[in-house]
Length: 599
Image 1 (cartoon, one colour):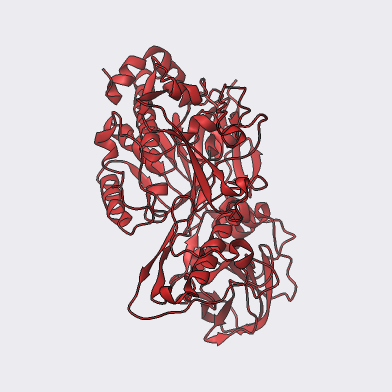
Image 2 (image 1 turned 90 degrees about the vertical axis):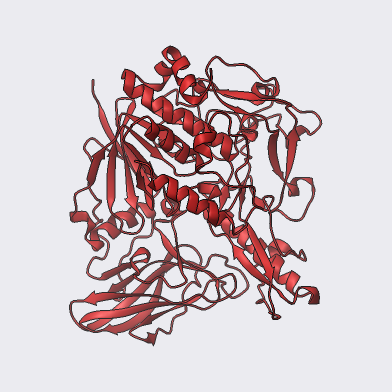
């Protein structure tokens, strides 16, 4: 039986179809007589940036006024009205930090040089804020976004309606189809192409997988949801790559970083190197593409769909093999593979460390995971400067005062999911950053200090872990177990984090690391790098098959890059022998290990 099943993820909801889906169409109950302006459509984004991190959770990619306390340059574009007349404006936005204070992310909309009376970004939750009525002229009309605060104002879409009270979608599952229809995308055909292997996730792991597969002559598609490759090592996040190169040095030196201080601007140097080496390969690169679904034939993945975050255009990527390097295990999750999230009970894999008790591994399984970091720093200027008051940050920071951050500016909360609540998690650390800096600026010694850089892309450490034929755990590393199918090696300590608040610290946005010494090389088997449930899906990076503690050592980027390289070479053997990854591990592991560099 050759059963086809297409799964498109619309606002976090799986929509199943027996035929290849085209673009979505809107529910006719929603207003369709107006003009839709999406955030990504702004021709000149000015100082606003396009935030794509929370596309599935909130229903789009939004413009963010990330000014670090200084208002950013206006975003500008033009829309075309068929006829002159009265329109009613609605803006999809949110007050990202509601409370007993003025909203921190306020902005104005300017139409044909006329500033609308309404101040936007002042209502809680992602919703359509009513901006009243205005007149549009026939033909082109200039639209601008004017940031008022410099503190993360955000705008997803503007709708100009002929109706005073249009029925507008609010749930992400409704928004995508509505946007596709009003933008005209619903009339388009989904573009398709075929590859030998499709890799989703363009961090160090995915880049390593792509370069390895390309070196073996495969036609490779590398899909990345941001404009730059490198993930947490990119200049958008600026975490330096840790871990050993193992046998993958020839590839990893093309994409890794020097050991710059975390958050340092010299991450840009390595970004240039990485982008250049990828472009000089034969890899088909797809930056700015958000994976949105997949097709399954029986148990196998047949294709993956991705949407261009700038244009909204959907492409379908067909291949016999897929590698999930998303970090969050999206392909495995959508495809129905078993996964884990959180910490195992220490008895399940004998992972107890009595010295640290529950901080290391709990008696009962729970949902705790390592958190997300947002890096930042400051610099000394030649002139004194002030920093705006921010009552909205004080509940997070109290009287704490700092002028820079490090990796331990990390947030995780038992009640928040690192994927589902990612926007709230990122925003919580931003409150901590700005509040600390405000308090620091009250001291005369910091009169000349000003913010230099604050990330807006979060660096996530842990979320879903897809289950393979082998679950890697603490004592595989601690006892340095030898595996006949070993394809990755590392020697760094096991390094698990907990939030300092668990030991009474008032700063819930800071973490502490526990280091378990290993003393020597340990190895990861190939059986941990493919899904046990989806025959043609390999997994590499922090979503590999492991326990929470098993992840703590090899989760760093050079080690994850080794995983990517192993799966990229394995994809070449899958093509050579017309077999799936499990069979490669069982029948051709010596050849795979030789490709990697083992004797």
